[in-house]
Each structure stands twice: as C-alpha cells, then as structure tokens.
Length: 233
Image: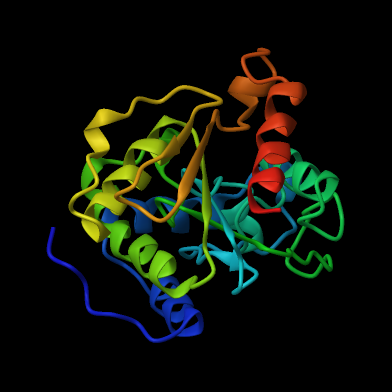
C-alpha cells in the first residue's frame, strides 16, 4: 500500500474524516438512516457523517473498534456513544481509571478520557455492520495518521476480528518488517513483537451479539482493561 501524505494534527485529520465521501455505498446508507431514523429516536437529529476518533491526544492506549453503529455513533456524532457497546466500553474505562464517568450518552454528556483514544477501522456505519474490503482500505489512511499523531502511544486494544485483522495490516504498512500473518485472532491474546513499538491486546467486540449470548462476559471484558492498565503503569 502506498503511504498517504502526512497530516499535521488530529484536528486537521478530524476535518478530513468528517468531509470524506469515498465510499458511495456507505454515504448512501448513513444518510438514509439519518433521514429514516427509528421510532425511539424519531425526534432526534442524526449526525449522519463519518466519525473521527476522539479522546486524549497524549493517550498511551488506542482502542480500535469496527465501525459506528447506525443508531449509536451515526446518530450522536461520537464513537461508542448512545448504544450498548458504548455502555460496556465506557463503563470498563471508568472502572480502571481511563474515563471520568461510566456513561457515554451524547457529545454533551461531559465524558473525558485520560490516556485513551478511541477510533475504528471504518468511519461510517455500514449496512448490517459488514463493511466491504474496499471500504476498509479506503479508511485505512485515517488509522495510519492517528497512530502517527498519537506520539505517546504504547498499547492498542482491538475489538473484534475485523478490527484485529485490519489493525495488524495497518501496522504492517507502517512497519513493513512486521509479519502480521503470523498472528490469529483469539480473545485475551497479547501480541508483543520486536518489529513494532506497541503491545496489542485482543478482545471480542462488546456487541449485543456477543454480550447477550454470553460469548463475552463482563469478567472476560474487564480483565482486558485491567491488564492494559497494568501494562502502562
């Protein structure tokens, strides 16, 4: 993959992400969802645009999800905000001292993250939560730039297999000597490879499909973040 031109700041990157219209399928879907809405949010305004990452610019921890939820981030304008996945993530961050409150409801709720930045491999809500390979590739330069701009970064947490696979591919773009094909997704794995300056903690995504079926329990989930806290001190 050809390296994208460097961006000077997270704020400029944010502007680039928000204005992105590379993937017409995603543009059409996110805008349709924002017009059609669902009954429980019929009186709410939807963001309906791509979502930049957010959090502490001096973060040592980067959390990488799949994509915004159609009626979560795509509605509220912030990753992991206004849906059950966000409830699980922010509660865990609060319990281990990375967030000032246990809830992520909307962009004006007062949430502040310390030592953590949250992003995703795809910035628009995809139909059925299934982005296409070309859509993931179109978004990869944004993740590359976030990693470059987060100068204090030491740890990454990947949520789900798509996040895991594409985070490793992204790191291979930045560090060509990193053999990303050597690693397989498994909840609880920790990757330390001398070719990259980061440790990678691997988790299931806190989607309803995983949490309501018991595939991901709260104990399994919070243990990941306790280990991350221990890793950075």
